[in-house]
Image 1: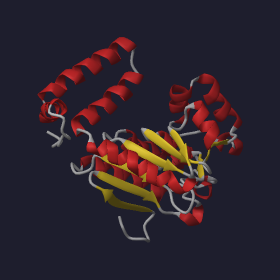
Image 2: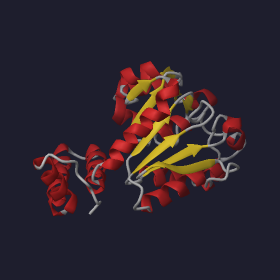
Image 3: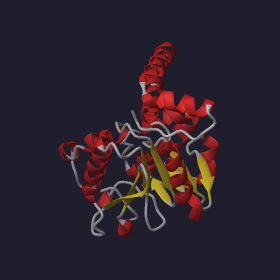
Image 4: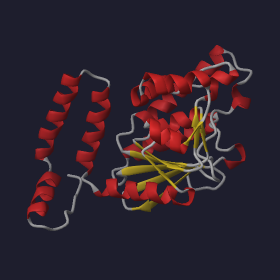
Length: 260
């Protein structure tokens, strides 16, 4: 994965943090089938890696991802599009149990915006340009945006983006609640890495259950989500990290979380 000829690079900048970098700058990191497969394979591998506690997702050469590769799709029919198995690749990212922090600068359009929407935290550079322009070329989002945007932003913000296809700035995205923070471009990846490092320093079982309860509860009735939260909370009292964390607090020292 570290070969500079690949479409995706992966390294480990800090303990517990894996950095996944999209590496197709000649196409502004547009998502073709090969890149989608590499993303899915990489996320599946990182999800299994017990040494990884948080994933940092980045673009390259000033852009996150400019969308789907239309040159690959333009002449396809429905069966050919179905045979690409794109939903399977998206699922590998959506089902990742590790928190994902995205550093988004430059273009994050179409599939690139949908990729960012799979993250749990989005740090945007001031140059970030986010949008779902699929309607402008006769189609619609196919990587989850119609569902994730409605849940994240509510009907009126989501529909404006989906139906017009117009892009928005980082500041507008922050005002809508589409990104977590906006920082200068040259600080974007460093800030996202700092957040990933903080998350990686936390007890991993608690982090995993927080993500699980928050995402599963968001698609359930409030009573169901509250029950899931409570059962997860109770389960954590059977972990070594709970004992270590609380005793460290009482003893006024830094905790040493083992992941057990």
